[in-house]
Each structure stands twice: as C-alpha cells, then as structure tokens.
Length: 100
Image (cartoon, rainbow, N blue to C red; front, top):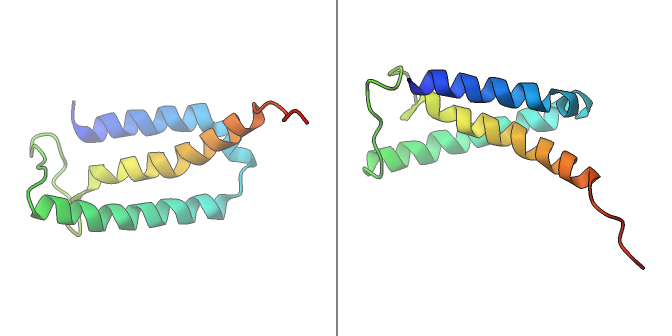
C-alpha cells in the first residue's frame, strides 16, 4: 500500500467520524490552523530530509514535493489540524462539573 492510499483512507475515516462535530465548528479557524501546520510541515520536513534524519521509499510516494517535503507528508498536518479541535470539543463536553 502506498502512502497516498493510506493517507486518503485515514483522512476519509477522520472526516466521517468527525463530520457531526465539524459542521458546528467555525470554518476559518480550522482552515488557518491547517494552513499554518502545512507551512511548518514544509519547512521542517525539508530540513529533516536534507540533513538525512529520514528518507522516503520512492516506491511508496508519488514523487511530488512541496518545497522539499513529499506531498503525502501533509496529510498528517491536515489530520492534526482537523482531528485535535474535534477531539477538544468532544472531550470538553464530557467534563464533569467541578465540585464547589
């Protein structure tokens, strides 16, 4: 399985599970969060790849890069930018009231 297939499956599952919460959230803060995370991913992935901290198997990636980071690596930034706020909302609802 290539990284693209895995990323699409994970993002689709995240979207399906999160859809009810996402519909009620404001869109622009989520979009800006994902944009900022993608910029940080481009910068730091490029640096880490350039210094040899990790390499990608060419058979598992598309071979398309943004700056120096493989396109597939941005799925993690998207998943974090969407998943964490949804988790925050869901877990925040379940908080028990504080005892006085």
